[in-house]
Amino acid sequence: MKKKILFLLVFVVLSGCSNNSKEVKKQGNNTEQNNKVIDPDNKERPKSLSCCEGDEKIEPKIYDMTGQELISIENDKVEKERYLVVDTRSEEEYLQGHLKYAINMPADNFKNLIGRIRDVEKVIIYGHNKEETRVLAEELLADGFVYVYNAQGVDEFSYNYVIYKNLIGSEFQKIINKKEEAFIDSRDEKDFNKSHVENAINVNHNNLDNIEDKLSRDKSKAIYLYDYTGDRSVIVAEYLQKLGYNNLTISIDGTKETQFKF
Image (tube, rainbow, N blue to C red):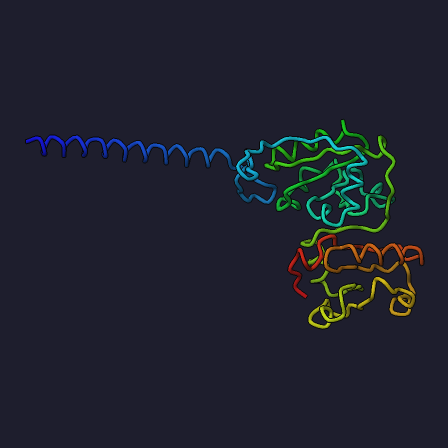
């Protein structure tokens, strides 16, 4: 008799646990459903409410950044790979001069362009001033970004500028697919020989003395540059600008970061 009573007690306890488990699972599914947002392309993705770094829970927030801190990141070949720098001024202002590795996402269309960078973990934005870009930083948080850095603007800090354009890897791939433009590949010759963009020329970024002989005489013609990480292309682009070439575009994501289809 005692065994029967014990068996009934165990059965009741297990049944209760099973029901509680189902209820928790149901609540979890509802939470997941509530935490989804719709992007401009009508694609659902989970909205990041927090992030974990090791055992530490990181809450989404906006971090203030000085101009000097931003310059230090851009000048560090390792650190600069951990961030995406976004210039939020107009396209016209961007083309007149911008930070070395910055892409352009104008403030007046910023929200519609966020989809371009959703695979990026850490984003640094700058514009005219921090008060102006604070609003844009909040839009990134609302979209699910966790690490957002609001840097001093061009009216608040004296930056050095470049005038070539920068594209992220996915956008550069679209240019490759057209197979109509001039490309400069500054990777090592052995990697160039394995695969490269059709009709691309291979240059040594440490020896550019005769590069003009390989290019069109028309210095306004579009030229697209790529390498492993973007660093070599920066050297080549700055050299070409001194020679008068004024329509240069770099992939800031090189072949080590993007699997280009040549």
